[in-house]
Amino acid sequence: MAGSAAGPLAGVKVIEMAGIGPGPFAAMVLADLGADVLRITRPGTPLQPTDITTRSRRQLALDLRQPEAIESVLKLVEQADVLIEGFRPGVMERLGLGPDVCAARNPRLVFGRMTGWGQHGPLAQAAGHDINYIAITGALHAIGRSGESPVPPLNYVGDFGGGGMLLLVGVLAALHEAKGSGKGQVVDAAMTDGTSLLSAFMYGFHAAGRWSNQRGENLLDGGAHFYDTYACADGKYVAVGAIEPQFYAELRQRCGIDDPMFDGQMDAARWPLLKLRLADVFRTKTRDEWCALLEGSDACFAPVLDWDEAPQHAHNRARETFVTVGGVVQPAPAPRFSRTAPAVPTAPSATTLEDALASWR
Image 1 (tube, rainbow, N blue to C red):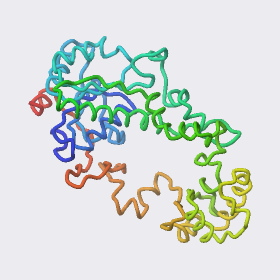
Image 2 (cartoon, helix red, strand yellow; image 1 turned 135 degrees about the horizontal axis):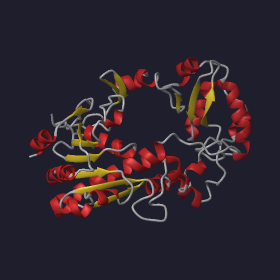
Image 3 (cartoon, rainbow, N blue to C red; image 1 turned 180 degrees about the horizontal axis):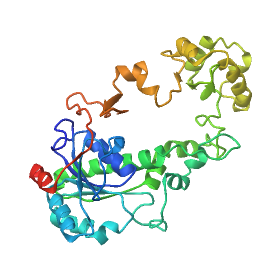
Image 4 (cartoon, helix red, strand yellow; image 1 turned 45 degrees about the vertical axis):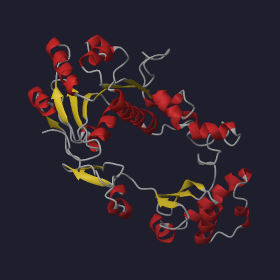
């Protein structure tokens, strides 16, 4: 069965060289939005519905050590619009599937390359993971509590935000350009570049003297009392982000805070003390009690939900932010489209070379 015929990318054919992390995530989003994504895996690779990043696409097992398998990929390349790979620089070339070889078969192919360090530079051939890639950009240094070690933000920033999303932007931009030129190109997406790009806002604040190098002491890093998380009476947490004066005033009013110390909202010298006082306030009620008092108001408030709670939240349920596919609860495709709504995701499925070629002709 071919990929989804629904979504704004219906008709776009994508080859995904199977990997982990940002490459599969980018391929998942392309498939979510309607592209027909064919995932090339090693023989014996099982279908894993719990690996959500492999959803909504067919899986074709090929042994790329064999010349006939390379030729099979090149036959698919002739019909494809996009190829995505996440190997170290040079691996695709050594396999005989580098950009030049693929372009000779299909000049309009967009060749998306996903790496941590990029295709060139002193670290290009070094091993690494998200934490390493974000470390050299300034981003990791900025995340954490004052006086404590930097905190890894899971692998959201490097792998998925600065990696997979940057690859998606590049691939879609190159696809758009190819419509006019008839020529494809290589998209070199590096997590170091993408994470640096995500940090543009903070670098601007730093340049303006409004963001110090001391983590945990700034406006949006937990330094401010009005932008942080707080424990409640039941040990659960809430998140507060009342930056603007009118929202800060509503937070105070709804929480019954009339202490004049809170009047100097932007006086950073007061923040450590005000954090302690606000923490005392939130410990007086349970998380649900605070939700009843604050949620849905302009106090910029939300409960901190865990993996099991989040899909059950009323707002997420109303927007159908989560779906269940094959018994696996997972995020629904995003964003939303008014005319070309994506189909509901499906579990990954196996295919043969013959079926894949036939569906793409």
